[in-house]
Image 1 (cartoon, rainbow, N blue to C red):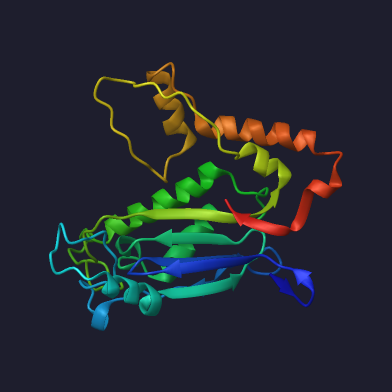
Image 2: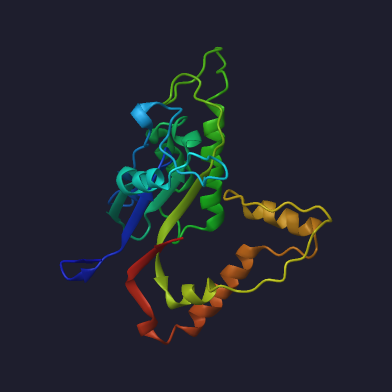
Length: 253
């Protein structure tokens, strides 16, 4: 997006339902992270158990299903935002299991306790993953009694709620040709680790856990190490080509 004739990175946000997204930015003078943007939960009549949502349903599941209702929810009920972002901004996305249990101030305090000022940029993936784990753990703790026997306060009420909890923490970084090479799609030859394997995703995994898994299975490779090596190699290849790096373009990593 061009602002006053200059390219400026923008973050496009499309949301339906009761998940939330916040953007944190470090205050001038290398100060703490502060809130600059927050989406709102979308719930029917404000009821916590009736979030606005879209499901994959057709007449095989519900004979009375009408696709027009789903399309109407998307076109008129969804929220769309275009937010100005800067290098170093932190984007935190969480399900209602996070934001029903944690006040935004608590999320910001946790972010500042993990992402200390003065650290090298960009923030290492393992540190972003550690913050996401801390947020999930703090959300779960809201459902446990304190030492005095009382439940802690939460946005949804005393004691929060027990719910599935997902959290993703990312950082806005400049996107260069080196990143394009390092993150280009590549084919993998997957090998089963056991006759009964389970596939899944964990957005809050640190390098220690990955290395532990590599030790258990000699054929396991830490995907993060491969990406970092590719990025370093691509950056060396592009050191003599100034045209490849466009400082005005950013991405969320």
